[in-house]
Length: 160
Image (cartoon, rainbow, N blue to C red; front, side, top):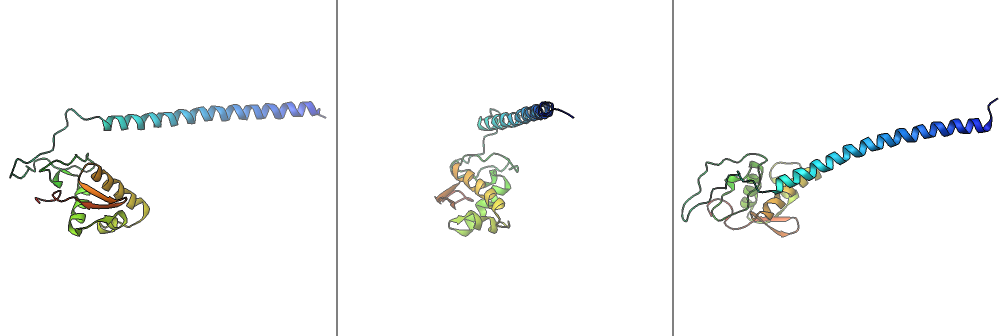
């Protein structure tokens, strides 16, 4: 018959092995997590830096329409609005938001915007619209009249 001390020593050994295995697994998980944090930080830094080779958006001279030679690419960066810059330089999703708001003639919230562009007004879709609208507002294309309520600033759509 095994002794009580012997049984306790065996259970202690099993517990120590489990702790060592869990610590090893934790170290591996922390390493993976750290790589994701580093990757996200690196991407944020790269995207925040101005690109030297970036093409400058076309700007119209006085009384002239800007050239439309630059085509918008889905997922492209939203340029800061400048006098004479048309929504044609924006990616299609952003142009669609501008068109809906311009056609409405007034302010809309993100749920209304999502529905107006044909998206189901569920939280995930509404947040995507909110992100785009906030980006357009931050770059001078839209006004955020109240938190979450967006409208087009006069002169930002078409040739007006």
